[in-house]
Length: 74
Image: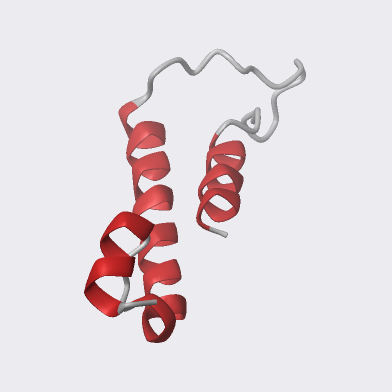
């Protein structure tokens, strides 16, 4: 679920767009726009926060099995 939400946000960030009233096809040449990079980083962070919130009762919010098993005795 973590990767699904994070990669979905990344794909949304890379959807080509065009300005209203433009007669040419959408441009995909946005490069490394800082706003897009920030959006992608926030998608990964929000995805992690949502997954921790969903699964904290099961694993205590830990996603690494090497940490979860010794601490919780899962």
